[in-house]
Image (tube, rainbow, N blue to C red):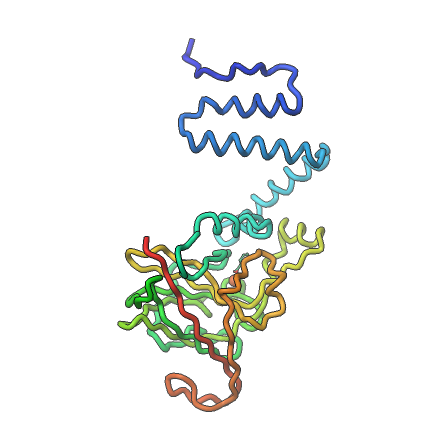
Length: 297
Ligand code: BEZ
Ligand code: FE
């Protein structure tokens, strides 16, 4: 006979409701890793409480299994439907909130989203990372600072965003080069600047099970206009965030609950004239300033 771990003393026959929950919880008592034990036991308690509360029917349970199966089938190296599901359920923002209780004044974090791509092109401060993306030219600048107010020279800043049609470069089947994305480094005084296009609001991908869920529940798929930033520097926590256009109509209905008031910025509108870097503008353009504040490790 092989050695069996000591399992529960709780009887596993004829169990219903609370006794069943208790037996399943107890079955995890053998888990050597205490954190895994805690997480699994709490998960069982909450899943059982949920099914009991709504008196889940068998059809509903099968529908849920089908939803999860189709969510998995929708995933590939370019599409993560489970992350999208987590985003629209507010779970992503809840986990971010739990794990990023930054001390004193660091820029708040928000969802990563599915459109980050490794290996973005490198730019110098002042460059234009639009690379032909359609939209009104937009100049963005600011400082990277530590929570103590000191500049962080050399901090690496990754930027990615949608164009005026609300599309990321990776959503164009025929496009094989980056547009509206890149990375640069803060200068010796911690300053950064770049040109891009004015971001516009867009719907999250709705051609999968998550889209069906939003449709069935009459929820908006829209995200307010934003630019994504990821800031890294040795000795500092990675900051993953966005800046949002404070004039956007979808700020209070963001499909993924990612808006923080501290992340709103004004995009000033201009028409022609001379723009930063001595650029002569013949039409409309915009500009904004946003400081990125990072917390030590
Ligand atoms: C985004 O901002 O890119 C995004 C975030 C969550 C879900 C879908 C898109
Ligand atoms: Fe986005």
